[in-house]
Image 1: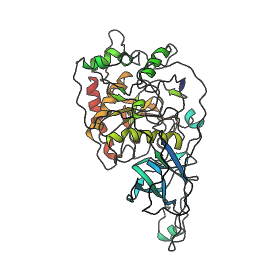
Image 2: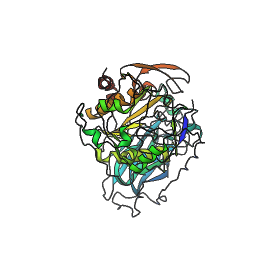
Image 3: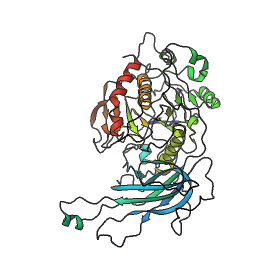
Image 4: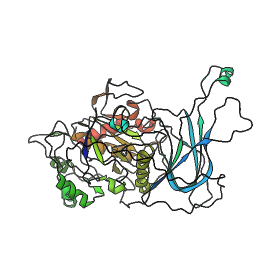
Length: 489
């Protein structure tokens, strides 16, 4: 189905607010504006100094076309041709990825990068970039997919402050039963139009973040209430009252939206469970299972540039399930750097991949901080681009990092439990339950197929992928149990 779309009224740090029900045409996609340096006439030497061009305060993207690398003299006939870039200088950047023209084309091969720390002669070891292959994206046939120039993309990789780069993309050798057949086989072609994206996140807003596990809020204590801005204290009716989040009866709340915009909040404060239940304006006698609202860093709090995204919001009817992901950006970040990581992913999703906004509805860092993701309201059923085929009536949560072989921190798993206990509870979801979803089409389920899944599922449950990483996936049972307990089940 196509999501209902409403016009933004300047509210982007979105707490629980009602939005006007207009349905304007989707805004035109922004062009893939590259601010690349001119091609080097020769590879940069490892001892070359940093470039003199400063980064843009609001962040920037350098987009550099890849080309076949020099063929070694001992290359075996028929061997795949490697594409990439030799060592070169660049304006400062902190995140890298590779994109290509056709969003449907898969990259069968390996992508590796080396980077030089800014202002030094120190080059990193070769790092693998997850090829990603379109599993995190808007659903096929959706407005976000059809009305924009969407590109294929690897996962983005956080490399830290850098000013030099080298990349190589090696095609996958075709499988063959014996050596003679392998020698004669044609290499799998790489996608056309491959470009290296170097993303600078821009200036940090300096939001106060937790650098370790946060203490559990005191039950029943009224302290948070006094510190809670009025605009957050009284959230509007949600699915606990209405069977659908968006109905014709929901009125516009432009005055409240303007109040929030003026407030410019960077954090939505935590509430106790009693305060949370009071805030959702329950019907008389209702006893829903809704967990305490956790502290959420807003888009303003992590410094999202609202001029990047499409100005309209997209919604579906409800939130039946949550898909947990890992961002696959690597674990070499501090929690103080998490806002920079988010701004980089956001820019990569919109400017490099062609999406309308940040793909995930929420993000969680390794210290357990929770962040608002895609714009439209943290209590709303915002349509994301996180799980190809299953974006409708679900939400996506990205745990920042890579968890195929690394255990996720307990604080991150706890944050997933808190977030799902609250958000799924607003829509009547049981974290330990099952739900039936209709596939929009993926490499695992054909379009229209009804699939029974856990209410808290991993990305791999809807798409044949390693996401959210084997180690994080194993922790989802713990998250389900904890989430249900927070709801009072």
